[in-house]
Image 1: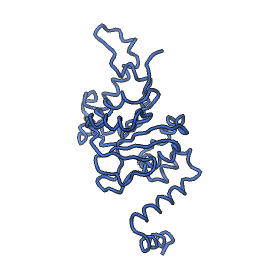
Image 2: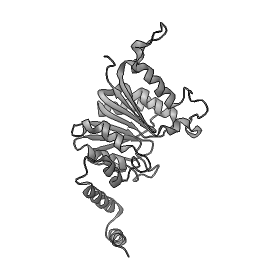
Image 3: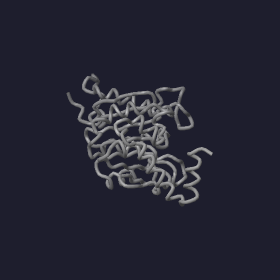
Image 4: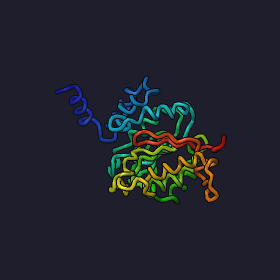
Length: 249
């Protein structure tokens, strides 16, 4: 019997499930010591698919580095683990470790309150419900970082962005993951018409025109809120970072 198997048996024989979970999280946090500046390593330790299945963490580190030691507020839509109450939260614990002075919040369609802990608060609800999103914002206050890793359904993603981006603090960043679902019918995406207005990627491509709204020479064009309040958009494979601020020279 391996040492790992022996240890698991010891935990099973001497501790209840809640106690085992606490011990396991303590050991994971011990493994993370000394790696607080390396998001890829933290993703591996905490078991989030932001590295491995995807290759998001180097991009996150590049964009989030300036927030590292600030008292930020981060909201991530999607906890993970589907409907199982005590499964998921891997990326939330990674963010908690990476931002030692940050408050981490999350929203999931399922009840994931069992995964809440110090500096991690989890709400239950539908990301496609603007009233709920605004209520959560009123509870949290101004947000610096918003990550959509939720249902990945195009309609839901656009509702969340159109509701929450205006509530994001100037200088903050809004991130959408797993943009591949823009092309998948299962998520109301479309691979045939790449300009389908219901697609997230189509919406994002239109936002790039807004960056240059003062150069659009058309009497019929009026810049919308997003054109006037997005300062840059950074595209990567299945991933986008949208910066909030006044779009002026």
